[in-house]
Amino acid sequence: MGIKAHAQLALKDKGHEETALIRIVGGVDRTTRLANQLLTLSGVDAMSGLEKATDIDVKQLIERVIEDLYPEITQKFIKIITQFDSEKRPVGNEYLLYTLMRNLIENAVRYSTPHSEVKVLYLWDKQALCASIIDQGPGIPVDQHDRVFDRFYRDIDAEGNGSGLGLAIARQIAILHGAEIHLAFTESGQDLSVTVSFKQNEKIQLTKILIYLICIIARLINVHIITTDK
Image (cartoon, rainbow, N blue to C red; front, top):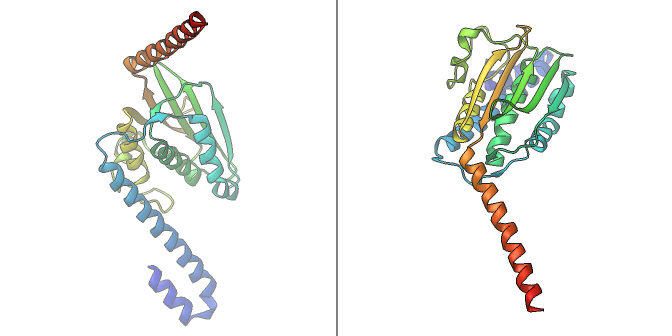
């Protein structure tokens, strides 16, 4: 039943007015979210490369996402556990990476059972910076771990009112950043983990080091010249 039908029901049947209005609000929320996701995906698709790329403080970004999702988290009594084992910063677009992390954490919260845990980990592993979100929800069958990144794909048994765009957006943003994203079950075989791996470009890192050294040398030379003139 669509939004209009629920509105008509509320007008005709006063006994079901509250239920109909609640469903109308839910319908408006889903429509708004879908429209926003389509706009985001369209914008990401139009990008041929990163704009306004800077070093991103992932810890601060994740904390901001969790703060913004506080109403949804508390509504389901979800316990968020964070672990930050690396201070390394990937190079990227802050808005896009915020969108990426929000989609993943929001999905974890939405599909988690009430009173469960969601873990958000950020660490250095095998020459890559890895951000992992682990939830205790129903999980996704292994044979669908690749398909869920397709646009509008939703398992027929999936719970909730998702549009099938959240993970597609996350993958496109990851690709723009030269990162990889994949799903896997944890060692227990029960919790689902989604991991974004930012491979560090050794040439870029070496260039940064050289620039840093050049700046130091330039300052030392400048100080030496000033001292000599005196």
